[in-house]
Image (cartoon, rainbow over all chains, first blue to last red):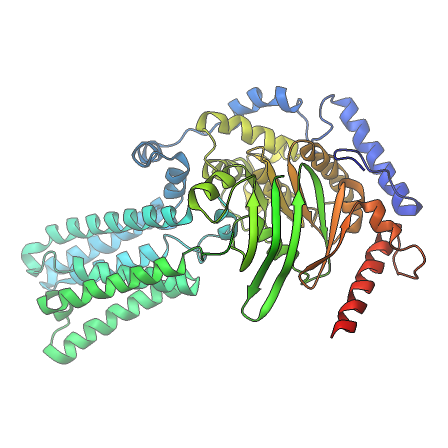
Length: 266
Length: 254
């Protein structure tokens, strides 16, 4: 049989059923000429004629953020992937603002660095929900796309990190005089985000990533309490900066390893 | 040739999912048949550049998928429907198809018309604004097919595309396949022998990672002659005969 040639229906009941279905479909196609390849339920004009009409109906106008991201990233696909990040959607952002605002108020009221202790955990949760098989139901499909999933990872992770760092800085600045610790949480936040992302990616579960991030942060604070008698040692002890950064680098390496396309024979 | 495969093997630990497969495919509809665990999905995932081969040579659309720039070029011209199509419940059909059109790096000014065309061709025109979470299984499958064909791919890979479609939709879908196969290489992995008989000009039968038959549906049907192979239709009997012979050969070897 040549390519494109229509195979003949087979015999028996199945063949007759198939022939009848072909007849029904052909009759529908004849009623709407040019639609021989459209599936049932279609009620518009043929492919070439349908496009202009439906373009008007279905054309979606990207929002301002998506437009700016598209220009900056030079990729409309990447921009679309960015604005669909779960932890960049409005409800999540509102929740982050509320948590950090409450932390700022508590910091001012108690004089304890609540914002500094909250910000890393908020960012870790956000970044665990930024990327990966745990949050992307069409993960396999997205891995066959021209826009590389690593680029999506990079752009989403940087955006979530940057946004949460900005929110944390604002909350920290608002309560700085009360707490005394202003930006000491930025480095631990980097390490915690690395941990949450690495665990979420390897475990293929955003919730597991969040759990690891929050648990890791609780352990570090408890260790500070045990060794120096204060929870804030986790963010105020300058001797921890290098270990935090080294830990973050290890986590990034794990993420890169987990998301690599193994070198195969071609 | 759009697909050139030589001695392709894929292992998962100790399991050999695809074993020394050789295949050359040009334009047309190519059916991939076989029992569960035969290696069809693994072969399709390698063709979709989702997983790399363990050994062997693979060239797609005249390019080497092992090189990132060439893989990106292949992916722009590829359509893929995975066996388990994950979907975003909050997306509408049109948004879902548009999302993947953008991820395939289609020129943005071409995307709306391409989305409209793909949605119409899969019969989802009246559901374009419906959220995916409100659709039936068959409609979700058609949304998956729409995203696969939105970029008018030169290589279209469909894993169980007719699962969940009703008989009328299947018949129409086969017509769509034949139409697509006039310009592109369409590889359809399926359990349904009648899909192959109705839509495919070439068919391969896989068993335990190997291709045990490659030819036309008529040639597969002819394999049943002189045997007592089981099946309700001639093509099914051919399928059973080839599979039985392959299994006997495997047993004899072991």
